[in-house]
Length: 279
Image 1: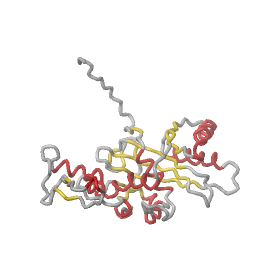
Image 2: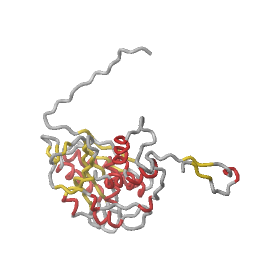
Image 3: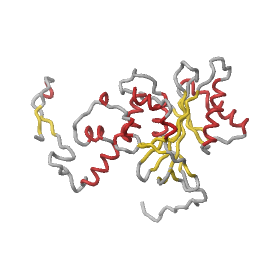
Image 4: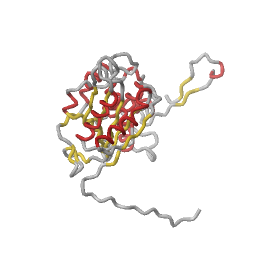
């Protein structure tokens, strides 16, 4: 039934009816085939994931509290990124993003994590290529500078020159410390400041869950042995289940605009906009 009587006791809603038209009916036929044919509907489902599709397209709400991060939905791979072809195995890589979610780095403090993800935007796939958990000695007098050294080693290992740093709280001082450490090492590094105001659980859910449920999230085997898998197993969208610092860094890397990746030797083709028009 398309129309449904409101059962609310609120006086101003009494007598109103609710109109629901899901994008696909019970027989599998699209509601607006001229706008949303089945092919486009399937593409939407593969893009947003089952939970969002159910809520937004089928008008059947699924509570976020029921969501989980299923590690078995990950695709594992062992290939390294080849800069000559801009590929990971057979996948053509179009972008890369390194994201650092910092903390003091002490053993018993919140985790300080830097994550690297690659993207295959043509097929909407994301590759968690490496995750660095940074830990410094409790007696370290310069913990932030030493963490900057670790992150610079991480970037150098992957031939990257750009990192995004979450600058909420402690991270506010890190861009300048990072520039100072990089200068002393003779490295040229571009730093992007990120301020996050959204709930951490929601950031993780929105970035990671759709990729997992649609089979588009890949993970390098070296990351399989890190704390990230344990974080996925313990994670809950209502919070409080355990540590999630690695997941937060990965979610930040997925959500940010990636730096374009091209095969070595590929020329950048100039495009000229058509300006022969009248206003």
